[in-house]
Amino acid sequence: MAAGEFDLIYRYFSSLGRGPAVDLSVGDDCAILKLQPGERLATSIDTLVEAVHFPAEAFPEDLGFRAVAVAASDLAAMGAKPVAMTLALSLPEPDELWLHTFSEGLAAAVKAFDLPLVGGDTTKGPLTITVQVMGALPADKALLRSAAQVGDMLCVSGPLGDGAAGLSVVQGEWEGRWQGGAQFADYLEQRYYRPSPRLALGQQLLGSATAAIDISDGLLADAGHIAAASGVKLVIEPELIPLSAALAALKDREQALRWALSGGDDYELCFCLPSGSPVPKGCTRIGQVVAGEGVECNSSVISQAGYQHF
Amino acid sequence: MAAGEFDLIYRYFSSLGRGPAVDLSVGDDCAILKLQPGERLATSIDTLVEAVHFPAEAFPEDLGFRAVAVAASDLAAMGAKPVAMTLALSLPEPDELWLHTFSEGLAAAVKAFDLPLVGGDTTKGPLTITVQVMGALPADKALLRSAAQVGDMLCVSGPLGDGAAGLSVVQGEWEGRWQGGAQFADYLEQRYYRPSPRLALGQQLLGSATAAIDISDGLLADAGHIAAASGVKLVIEPELIPLSAALAALKDREQALRWALSGGDDYELCFCLPSGSPVPKGCTRIGQVVAGEGVECNSSVISQAGYQHF
Image (cartoon, rainbow over all chains, first blue to last red; front, side, top):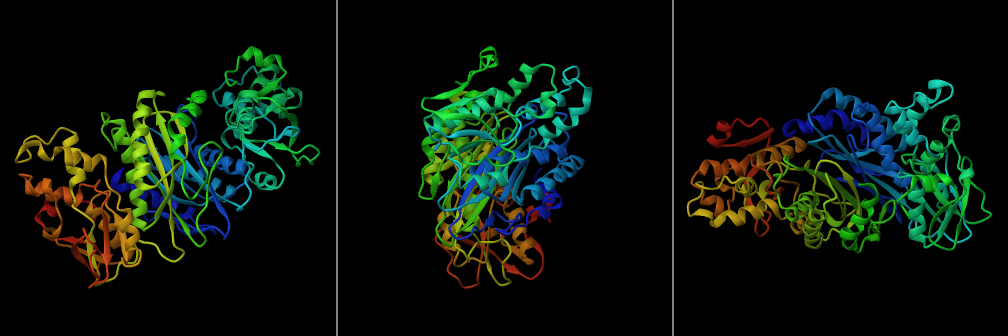
């Protein structure tokens, strides 16, 4: 992309770079960020590859939004307050229309999640979107995966399975699956392309949750990471898992539960709370933490599907 | 890559994640870093794409090293002290031998540049290596591109043109170019694959240089960024540009100068010093800052090559 690269970056992205912690934004060798005294930096990097993490026909505006939302979800899972992000974008061609549309989705996410874009690298290559998010944590608190305690409640922040169901809709597989036709198609597509990282909830849980993770790979897989890191067993009661109206209306009930348990792409939080704590509004208790290892979920769906995670 | 992804990351990279500013490394939703009181964060992201930024036949160990060195050079150009880095790696297949060899180069760079690897994302996709570097700056100092002053000296930190000459050697084009045969081939290949980001010099220049940039796109292009950001003109005296013994031995003198002026991939620093300041050891004055705009270089090579940067 060479000579044109800088023009493109400046034209589309330079207005997205301002924020209270940003001392220097796009345009020099590095961006400079300034945390408040005592704050620590939380950071995570996420890559979306065309035809692997999103369909090749995806609308660029949705991709711009989704790339940021997915990365921001890792800040939510640590309880971190958003500070800024950087973007590494590989594009086969410097396509003006594509970049314009992509940047609109990116701008929407910058505003929605308070994540100014402070740096980037635009390169020629197969379409690949990498976002690095940076957030602020207090000196003495963070939501880790490793501190779940036996006796804790296991909770989730919202309905599960919508992300995987949404991908199925995006891929044109929804027809025939739903009673009542296409009424849920828009909702599910939005849940796939425009996930809602639970940033406010994550910061709220800093004072109460013992462990947390965001559900990107599916509840069973991600709960398994908490179990492994904390040295405990998580018992999930599948009948307690919250489902959206869209998933509840699915003809194939087992498919709905399969998506909820292992579909991924939900970007809800899965977290552990000391027994007796109030469950935050909008969240649902789905099980408990016991002695042992791995994840137990008493459902015939599990054994049928043959999950390899455990 | 799904289930195996975590195994791969842990097996190869988890030992590279320790450092004085690292509170939490690879293995949770985010890494956590802690700067010293008053320090600011400098950060930059860089992507290398196969067949665009390196030849497809490149040795993975060299790629691992080079990806980190190139990104670290942006910290050097700001005068920042290295703190940590993250890696987003897209690979067509989870190739164990490739990852093992790549990780050896990565480990060498982690040690050479004090950049512990604190997070990453490994995805299936065309070979793409993205490194985000993070460094520490004092509260009140940074090497920007934007503060060069009329009357300053223009300097560079080492011989130029080796990077582009090295790429030419890597691509098998050296034969016939050099008097004395292949004696410089190894040196130039190393200069291409194993650049030396000038981290110590950058920190040293924090107190004295008015502006700085690292030379990744070629001296003329990168000096042009200083000129534009500072609202000045940079006058380069081509006969002062330092050349390595390898480039000095080149039969085609104009080719040597062309590489030095616009070849790129050198990762030396280009910086401005107030007139009369001592030029740091190993550095060379190559011109001066005057009123005006753009970059002037009185060489017939310039007009012949038809550079589009200005």
